[in-house]
Length: 226
Image 1 (cartoon, rainbow, N blue to C red):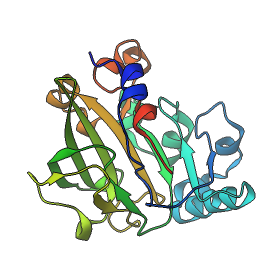
Image 2: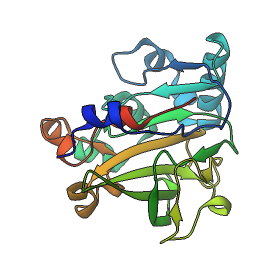
Image 3: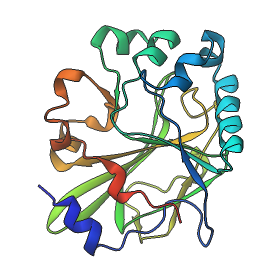
């Protein structure tokens, strides 16, 4: 298993958002124990345009241009309100990535050298829309970084090699991102996680949490924003 703590101290990881710009970032928990999500009306959750505006308002209140929501948040309230039958039936409520809310057309850059192994559409409401996956080799092991809710017109082709800090895509709106608020879903996968197709598993169950980082590591170490 890759020693992420060691990599965090020795590996140069480049910012994913905007070159040569400093950012103000605030944290917005979307889990059930947080006050924010439970204070919204059902309409404000179901209508993702209203939901997106609530996030924009929150960013303005905190003088921020990026809004971060965390890894392994329990979002049962959100998905029961949205009526996502598959999530509810399988009790998959724990978020396997970071969500970074930002405006449409926000450019994203590769944090590490990598090869494009997936550049595809996950169709239907509630999925990623367009998703990009990069393969990285670190200390002789493979690590995959996943970028969900992207703009089809800006994604590189499969087998393209990208250098760290090359532009890789842009965020997109409701029409192509699976019907969600405007954000990046950033997720990491180990080689085992990629082979077992955690590319399409972006939420998990409480029972799987004890071993989940064998498949989907905490992406905090790779997230750079300035």
